[in-house]
View 1: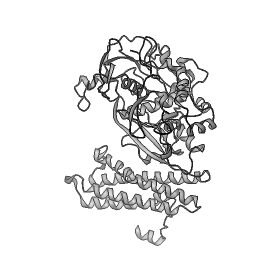
View 2: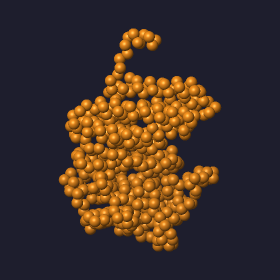
View 3: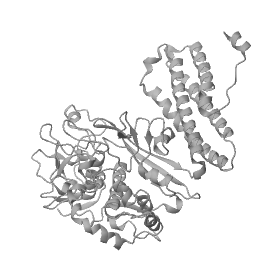
Length: 538
């Protein structure tokens, strides 16, 4: 089967007028002036997340801007499709999905292992252990028997990019299993697919200086499937660190040794997208001990924290989704916890790429994994508000205090409900109802938070004190805490209902939320207790 990912029209997109079609990568700017592609349009959300990274990686590797001037110029007026095609054709040979030579994201050697059904290539497919125990209750085995080359290429890139743990010797991606990806999205005026991609491409020198070894410049250093796999057997294998490969391999990492079975293919209908194609793919082979990425990787599309030794650790999606509680570390630096936004987000905010009149957003997405099992796919959007450079520090300090105060009150609300429900609050640890309290709190406060950020920016821009904004935010947090407490205690275990315990827990909730600690976090005035009153209370 011959199917080249530069030549073929395999990437599903939606155009501004609603038209749906598949395009080749070099066609992303086609119809830019009248009817541009505005979004990816795959049948699966994780495919869209993978495809946007595929296209960003393609541009970053083959056609990056040389400097800030070229970045700005091409953001306003992108290259025509023919120009993009000319550049991408220089590495066309690296993107063959089939054929007798090296294959995209597949091991160059013949894998002498038993074939698997193509459905197992999907991250949310039940594993061998689950199937063996007949535990595939929600997602059934072999529910997709065949895929078209387009969906197969998407699935292949998705699993290599998000590669979760999969048993002994099955390696995870450069960013670990199921990394969180954060991208910058344009405003209404810059809402095309090209703008989305270009906003997340770095200048060439900036990219090459992140990590990796720019002197390692062979084809296999960038695209590992073009050479012999750096296998990682326990006794004879090797690890792969940033010094061993070119920085571009951060987009083209290949932790899994996979080979699609492409002999004797037949015409059929893809059971994912429904397209009728000349050849459908039904099986593939996979072997353990692929590339083992170790060391201080710093992928430009992911936020990072630091461990005690200062080594960057990629952030992963956590249960409950992505809300404004993750603002610190996703949008702005979290100095206290040593968390930093993705480099593309940092570049956008710190280097003047955001005009004051335009509303850009952050797009965060990724799998929440439990080792090799995906719990959920999360996606979230956050506004990226413009702040004058002279106001940046004061603004970010105030926002940080607002998020920390919200986190304290959310935690206290959860604890108060547990105290109201149960004689032994520890018994409720991890229960679904208790866990939902946090999600409800953050979800309900999200719109209020973004409104407060807008008011804060206006206030500081007018050289006014932000006390009124902080006071209103505190009032809103306290009000939401009481609403959740009152609603939740009505749903508590009837057998354990104790009105006195509920009243006591509610009183303690109010006292804590209006107490010294929260007010000091927000920089609010703290009432001094008169000496006589203090003595009387004791």
